[in-house]
Image 1 (cartoon, helix red, strand yellow):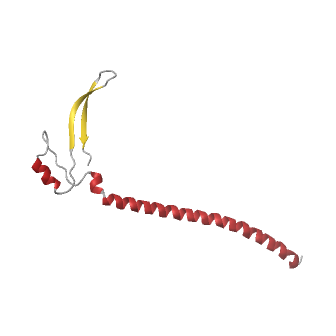
Image 2: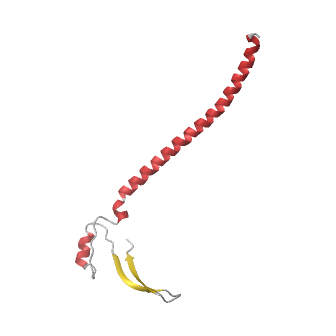
Image 3: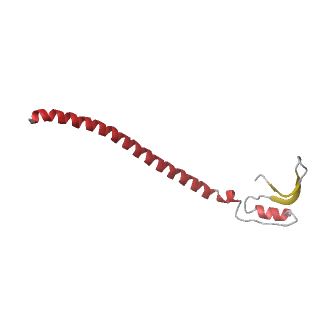
Length: 117
């Protein structure tokens, strides 16, 4: 057979393969775009979360200093001195008995009250 007969069929097959290949290449590009977008979004979110936590770490973790007094609250002088160094928060803890209403069973519990600071 002559190349005059083979060439049109070869061009037709090449065009069909190229058209199907470009469609597959589009899927590849879409997957590549989605992967890069997901990685950059996660990186951006983690960087923002890390910087937010570092900026507010003292407030989120409860501060840098803890003073515990047993059996008595802070005096006014101690409270004003402590307030000079930043925010002051009070926590009151005590053990008490709690009774269930349904069956009148008692249990030892620890009660904890925290101010709204």
